[in-house]
Image (tube, rainbow, N blue to C red; front, side, top):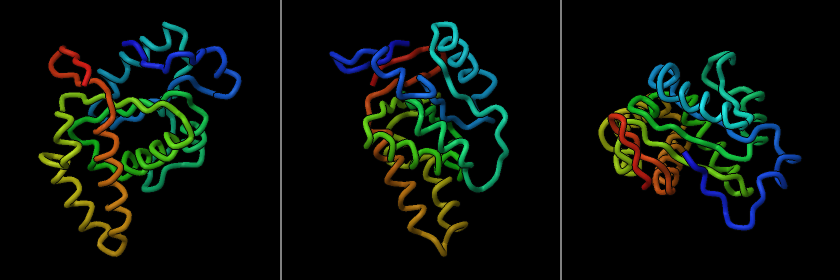
Length: 170
């Protein structure tokens, strides 16, 4: 997988500024032991210092350690999968990633066995998950509206669509 970096950008010119070259955002139960672990290994083998959240404590709120890792990574890869939007952790991580995009960090979506339009339009599992999140956070609907906007924005970015062993750039 090649990373589209703007012409004129020098990989080495950024290394002094970042703790990680790549941050991987993913729903663990969907992809941790298959696609994400293979991607991590491939990046690591190519010399990319890659953050993967194997040892972080789980909870409703993402940890300050995770936020620091997101903010200190040059490239942020979001791996969307069928159950991604059922996780408040993933959705909070996504909003943080898109905030970092405003500061010039590269954000690259990967759609793992899910159609990009399903994420963008919040249909299928994404629609079901967000309806569930609206019920769960009925007293904080603004949070769910931020998640909806973040999903739409991220799914509109150029990225990769992986379906049954076939990868296409979208």
